[in-house]
Structure formats: structure tokens, C-alpha cells
Image (cartoon, rainbow, N blue to C red; front, top):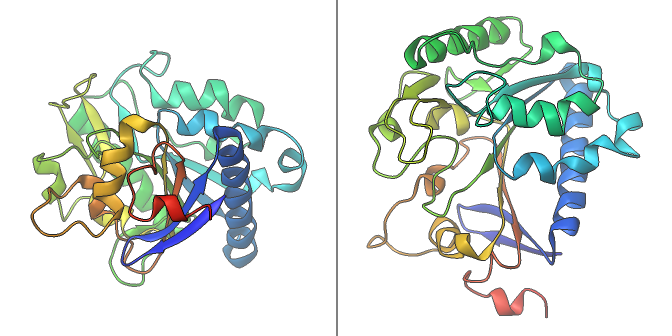
Length: 266
């Protein structure tokens, strides 16, 4: 593994393969969980869909299945497709099948969207649920905004630089007031989704962006490197925690276009 720090873009960890990345990601999550539980008695984590869930697989085995205090975990989703919970496109289903069903997490601590509602209704209700948990400090509150302060938000990134369901050039990027919003015109199917807004993501204590594969190398360069004002601003580049820490988990292929990549392993 190679480490780098990028001005205003957080810390980066480049891994030689997916197994190394999975091991490092599990260690990172377990350490944050332990620190959060010790400090405030809870660990509020927001998941995303895609390959992140499979890359978290090491948490299901030793030593984490015994050492992590799973009873203190509260699970949320940074974005979700507005489909039935048993639908193949559901981020909840993906996480349940590959991760949550294999861990002793308290079922009432798993907060997924209401799949019987419209996208707008589901976003409003999910925001209300989070507000109730902020009141009881299950989810912390940001010192620099009125937003929730999740202990960890885990994000993937698409080849177009989208994170959560924040897509390039979409009006949702301008949302400043709501914690959770909705879209009905996602450029990537399915079209209806709910998503955390940029202010919520940037209010987290920790944000980890996990990126793998050569198809995302250019997006990684535009999201992380100092590329200048003439380059397009990707949604991933808007992730800049105000009082938190940003960490990029990359494999060699996703990192291959970063400045200085050839020196990282010297």
C-alpha cells in the first residue's frame, strides 16, 4: 500500500489489489467504530451500493466478527434506489445479502427507506427519521452546520465522477437546505432515487471514497489532483468535509492517472 496526501483533497491509500484494499478498508472501519463507540456510545455509518459492499466482506470474518461491538452500529444509506427492498437494484438488498445478514447487527438499528412511498415522500420521511435520531444523539450533530454528523459515510464513485446519487450537472448538486433529497431523472437506471445532499456528506466526521478499476482512472484524476479551473467540477470533487476527514481508497488501476503515481511505490 502507498499513501499520499493531496492539498484540500484528503488522504489517499493506493492498493496493489482488491484483497489488500478489502483488508485495509475493514481495519479502517473497525478502528473508526471502536473510537466512536468509546467516545459517544454509537457508530452511525451510511453505506452506498455497488462494489463497496463486497469490499467490506472481511468484516464478516475474524477478528472483526468478535472484536467489533456490532450492537452499537446504526446503519443508514447515503443513497438508495426507489424500488422494492427485494428488488435486484435495491442497495438495501445488496447490503443485506452480502453483509448485514452475516453480522449480529440489531435489526431496529438498520434504517432503510420506506419502499412503499414515492421518491419525494421517501426522501422526506428518511430525513425525518434522521432528524429524530439526531435529537437523541444516536447520530451526532455537526459543530459547523445544523446537519447530522455521521461517524462514517462510505461512498463509491462512478466513471462520470458521481457519488451517492449526485450526478454531474444535476440540479440536486445545488441543494443547500434539505438533508435528504430525491431525483426522478437519474442518468443511470433506475431513474428514481433518494440521496444525501452535499451539505450532509460534508458534515460527516469521516468520509471514505472507494474507487476501483481503470475505467475510473480519469474521474479519480479529476476528483483528486490539482487540475485547474478549466477542468469540469465532478460531484466527487465537491466532497470536502468541513470539520471531518476524507480518505480515498484506490486500487492501482483507479489511481493510474494521478500525478506522481509512478513514484508512489518507489
